[in-house]
Image 1 (cartoon, rainbow, N blue to C red):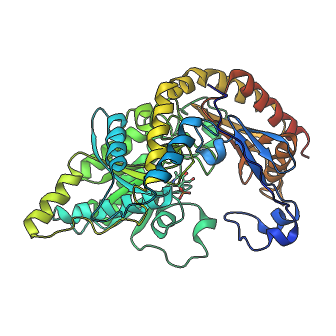
Image 2 (cartoon, rainbow, N blue to C red; image 1 turned 60 degrees about the vertical axis):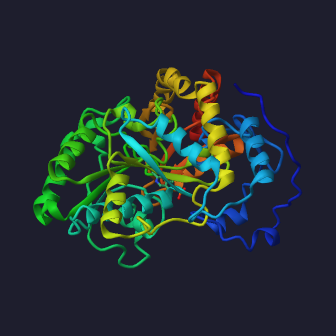
Image 3 (tube, rainbow, N blue to C red; image 1 turned 120 degrees about the vertical axis):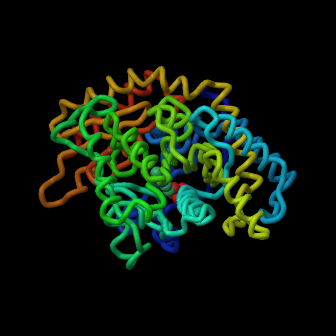
Length: 455
Ligand code: PLP
């Protein structure tokens, strides 16, 4: 499936200090970057081109989003045609055909055997998360349970950077500088149990009991005050934490027992990463709301979405009807269901389907597992975790400088021609789903080389 790339364009840019100055880069060590910039100027299938003309094997599908590989002709042409036909349509009280078509396509492929019936569009994972939290809160109110205002997240959860997302998220660095955040938020413990589960392949055996913490929180506050629990079914950004066997089932049971909505944040796991359309299929647990982004447009045009389980939309409609109201949900974005994003999304879903990329990911998963676990013998490596086509490789941190070793491995890999992703001392690999067995071997070999080159 590799090789149908659209035209490449030359970019005139020199990474001089002057040229780099004005851009305040997100989630970046700006000072280090500007001393030694890493600049990408092109991309094709499994590779990026750097500004010094090197080919970089994409070990991370961009930022976990380019699942079909780069420069896919069908997607490029769909966006080109759409921008010429209809560049923008107001998103409120008006719409355009592709918005409905994409929503129908998404519901057609949604997990959970027809459990979901509506899609709300946003422009990023962060916006999808905030939308889902607001839908959950307003849903309970529409049902006459407005006292359900508490939200439960999880330690080491990443749900983007909106105030909702960082409130339910559990990454200390993302929260600590921003004041009080949302009130009424609690956190479940994370599921990382290195002592019991080190080097587990696929889902670890131990840790289902950690879901019972939800019972404790319910007892503490009264379950009737809790609106929703949000978790990443597999936590990606904080180091690929695979859910222990039975954990998500247990969360679902407790949510059902108390009428709490369960939200899966599938911004990373959606669209094939685990070898199934969604993590919901992979783990056999169906939440009430699913947030997606990234792979929905293969990373080409920003888009996020919330899948709503049957009954949620109808509840809003019924409440507005009864109240004699007009707009049922006072929420939305100028760019909700943007025509270019919808065009990119429709083309992307076609590529996934035509090329059987989710199935391809599932077929490669055993090979992937074997390859990434071959790094377990490296002296820097203290854990390897994997599922589908994602892996986390945890390095022993240097005592006085946590994160330094990870950053050096990332830099060494980049210089050698491999893009990896680091969170502190955890290296994540999540290649485009078009990856070949040979490229998997190459990726693992290059990772070993980068580890060897790092003291
Ligand atoms: N939720 C999860 C699980 C994510 O992994 C991410 C991004 O990595 C987000 C939300 C935020 O998405 P965005 O960066 O598009 O706002």
